[in-house]
Image (cartoon, rainbow, N blue to C red; front, top):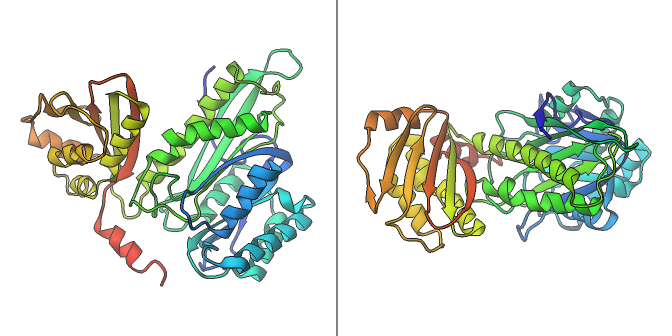
Length: 415
């Protein structure tokens, strides 16, 4: 079955509406709250930050996902993270969910929450509740509403991030097939590092799928998508990725790891990978997307570790910013990553839209055309690869260059 990209984001699947508003949480003159609501209760799955300091909304959502296993709405704010706020932060989460549930006519335990922004300050509950009331009255299933919601959750992002696909699954009535949709939105630009990375991500689908299988699919896909991006080596306190499936497409229930499950996983992978790459490309101050593919490695985990080491290297990132074809920095990042390999057997290449240059093989840095290298390093996406010549496993990691603007953005982020 073919997975086809289609316009839109979280409102592309049947039964989902979105809204946004300017609540004045921190920013002025822009929207800073978003809401997603399903017409029917949803199976829900999630993955969350591995940071020991978890924000209040992360703790709230973990309870909903792992205990309730069902949800119907998401309320997100930008500007203040509601992290390191103790009992007050948790109380604000409960009061927000209670208010949203009452306003929407759904259980408070089916309301998911997300916050992003400055760590430390308390959320202004009155503005949050006013925002919930405003958005509840403006919910829409248009593609434009989904796009507006994706813009409202941005912080230092320079572009909104959304993606949608459609695919066919057997119909519930046993006759033919039905079209299933999946859409997503995310935000993330700084404080991004694997496990998870520093982001908020929301995926909606009208597919009917068992909740346990939904969680299984998401948990299997995250390691090769969102966990393979890095901007600055910092793992956020607020990382949250949620998937809501309301079952309104009319497909036969996915209750086993069969062909339909495989198709669903392929669609979810495409959504997660696209959103992840968009975040890496939009890293704070970034001018280039940085990609590293490691292939023919001995194990999948070693391939991941090696690829992430390269895109996470400050020297490699600075090299890409300066357009300096210094292969030694890539070799260095591979060498200290941890996995064992024979340096005499690996091959390192730089890939452009039209040209490929060999940087290293047979244990030696190779002579290459400096002008071609400069041309490739001037492209928006700078791609490297390393053939380990050890096995058949591979992984790709994404990051961005390190620029002067990154320091400027983060030097006064709070003030």
